[in-house]
Image (cartoon, rainbow, N blue to C red; front, side, top):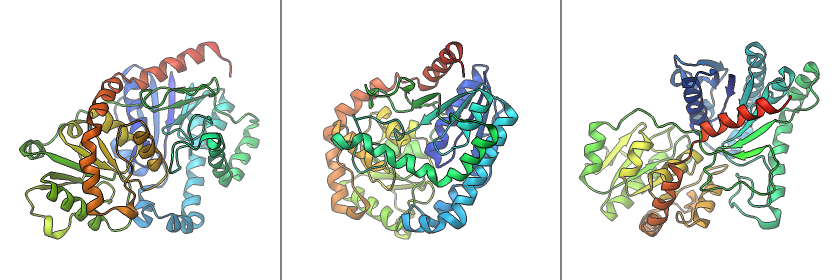
Length: 400
């Protein structure tokens, strides 16, 4: 198969597409992966073709963090023009490659239209469950995962957001004479251990499990020696950046110190900064990034933002989490894990202080057994191969 994949967003949006590309290419498929500029170097691979989308999402995180106000003010002058250009390039790339299958992130609004024009199979990739309506749970992006009888209504908000680019998508659809812009398949990359397929989902929507590939990277001897010395906590907020990164780090360090734990702090995209007074502390290790797969099974608890990739990595490792949500689906994941008995309630930034953090760290101990049990289920997840088989089946049986 000739496969085109396109993703935009943060690292949590990029890594599943990278994993899929590597595995699919290793099986002999002709794979093209389109990513924004900050991920091009990492995505370079001799087994598949990496394509560049203009601009970088990281620049807005560096400038505005996750501030809703700052990003709203920046939308018309800077964010929207960049996204419009990305949408144009996506369509151009698909027309040039003429793939059999187009896998696209929900923000790639021109992808399904162009796929329909070429009669290629269009597959919406829901890294988080936001677009396939159900009564069983609310759309990810809320503070809760369950609003009972209102659940199905919560999905309409995402559809409304697409209207911000109606002029561009409508123009393309008219140009290509495409009337049906709907995707052919939708795949949710959540582990079936965490999210069973809703009974009221459309027939073309599936829960396939994470697109995940264990990285070859190993922990450095320095990190290994550190975590083997005494019980350790990990803290990292991935692509999130908000408020005072140094103050957040200081709170985490002081809480761990009071409890007698070491701590590994991951800078990510700037969510944490090491305070000067702890630069030489022998119980603190500050890293730019680190392998979650290799480190998470070795720590007592994981303090993180609640991104879907980190949620899955922590549960696969069998290690309890303390979620400090920033935006979008992160409060939803914190709420869902707590409802499933897999972790304490979220610790919002407005309540992020040493006393509350100490209580959450202590509380993780009672969730340990259940987290380790579900980790055994999640080890069986095989999202990439499940997706490939699903696509092959539909290519053989459907006409588009």
